Structure formats: structure tokens, C-alpha cells
Length: 422
Image 1: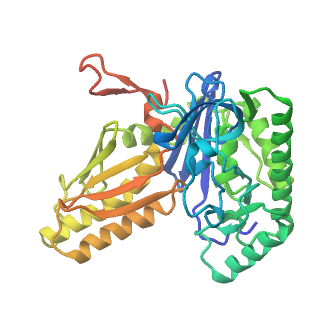
Image 2 (image 1 turned 60 degrees about the vertical axis):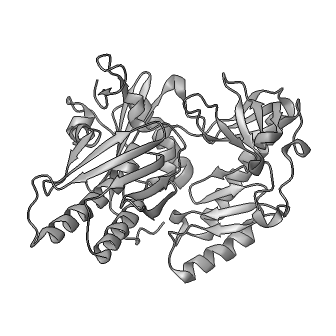
Image 3 (image 1 turned 90 degrees about the vertical axis):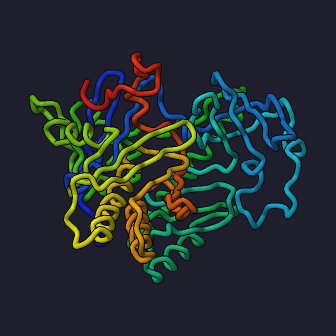
């Protein structure tokens, strides 16, 4: 695979405990993603279940499906219709014409249980591989928007049409850029075989039943963001390192850098500067290099970010000082949203700027930063009150929630940070 895309060299630093795995992703030494997974709480997103419809709600155009968990899964009418919009009826049908109580259906989890809500599921199935995403019933070919060269987009689109069968759908991922057709076709074959196994298990299983579980966090990050020819992977567990090595063998056919087993006496997060960055970046107040600051506050409905000039007075005039602070804050906010895995509505209170040109520069800087994020996001724009509104797809609880607990001194209005080494 070519690495001529100008991407920064990455390091995956993995800390393993008997019941917890923590993974930090560094780009040129800077922390950009952090994820953790407890062994008893394996992520549900991406997993397939054979479920049974237990309730159909015409007023909500939705159904509840028993997939074997404490809370029933939520299945909205849009997630029952054909995954290709062009093949959907012009008039949206009633949910009761599509599903009935007692009906068994294969569903895939698209959103974790959050708060009092059960998982959200869909029948728009997708199986991500290294170079492609396989959608057994979607009947279209798409190319990642991050592949910008028109000639390469055309090549990948034509290749997708050649290798898909019948009504299958294929998305060519960003890493498929400049990749050999044989590798992409082989990836799709593996995913197609995986889907056939899921269907066979469904035929022989009684609902509710787990049919397929998505990969572990380490395997997901290797599959989605790791360049096996240039990036480094360091793990402080010999068993986990061996498993990662075998997974790399499977997806690269032996063409990759070896996995390093960390054997230092110091904690791996301290040795690679991860712990210091975690403590800084997951604080409520983050100091910018210029001396300005950004303050994070989270509610159940949204996240609010406040930008302050702080000690920074380095511009030629007030407007210049404010704009420089806001531009630096925009870059940092984009990184921290990705790092903290913040989802839902996000409101940013930048320092007031008088010139429209400067306001647009701040939006552009934020959009460039968020374009590096694999999770779908959208900068909505400025509100009438001068706040910048954006949204980011919420798939799981924010990472920080796994490592905080309610403060017993303020009845839960604050949280005690436990992230990193403990």
C-alpha cells in the first residue's frame, strides 16, 4: 500500500490489564485518540443479532426488538427500508406494514445503549474490512470523500462495480487509495464469506442470539487507522501483542512492521508521554500554547466549550489577539472532540470577532481539524447569539465517562477524573 498521502507517522500505544485494555493513538507524538474497553463490557456497535420483535409502535414509526440484553433494541422505520435511498418508496410506509410482533429479524447494532435508552439497531448491514466496507443489500458503490484525486476516485468506483455481485453494495475506504485491485477484491471476498456465516448462524439459531461480534478495540484501530508499513504498534502484554501480530498477518499477508512488546520498568503510558497528555487533555480547563484557554462543560443534551484569551496579549491589536486565540482554539477543539469521542450537539463560545473574514477563518480551521476525524461531524454555523454550533455522530458514551465517577461532595454535579494510570 502506498503511503504517499502525506499523513503523519502514528504510534499505537496499548496498555493491557486483566479486565481492561487502553489504547492511545499518537500522531507525531501528539495524542489524537484514546479508547478503552473493559472485558465484561465489549462494545456492541457493529455486532449482529437475531432478534424478535416484541413491540410495534405506529405513533413512533419504530419497533422494539429483543436481542437478549437488559433493554430491548430500538429499530426505526428508516432502518427497515431498503438501504439505497433510490430504491425506497416515495411515501414512507407505516411501520406495522413492515414488522409484526413475534417476527424474527437479523439486526446490527449501530449505537450503544446510552443512559436509559437501549441500543439502536438497523437492517442496513455493513461489514468493514481493511480497504472496503461490504453492504450485502445496498446495491451501490461509493468512494470515501477523503480520496480527492478524481482519477483515483474513478478507478476505485469502476473497481467496485467490477467486484461486487448482484445487489451488493461496496464503499471503498480512504486507505484503498493507490491499492492493488487484488488486495481490495480479496478483502471483499473475506467480508462476503463473513456475511454468509452470519446468515447460516441465523438459520440455525433461536432468537434472541448473538450472530457476530465486532473486533476488539486494538483490532479495530489496526484495521481502521494503522498503516502496517510505517506506523508503530507497542503493547505491554505479550499475549495481546501476539494476537495483534496474528491479526496483522491476516490483513496484510505478512507485509508489515513487527509488533513491539514493551518491557520497560516504567508504565508504558508514562514512557511514551501519554499519561501527561491524558491528564492535560481530559481536564475541564485546557491551556493553549499561547496562554489562552478552553473550558469544557458537559450536560446530558450537549457539550459547551468556552474560549478565553487568558494571558495571551500578543496580537497587534485586540481583533488580532482574539482571532489568533480563536484559531488556535479551533485547532485544539477539533483534536479534543476526536480524542474525547464527544458526540451529539456541541456549542463553542469563541471570543467575539468583529470581522466576518476572521469568523470564516475560524470555521475553516475547525473544519480542517475535524476532517481528520473518522466519526461523521458537521459544522452547522454561527447562531444569532454568536455561538458556533456543530454536531458529531454519537455512537458510544464519551470516553471520559468510563473513567469518571460522580463527586460525592457536590451530589453529582461534578465528576472525579480517574483516567489513565490507576
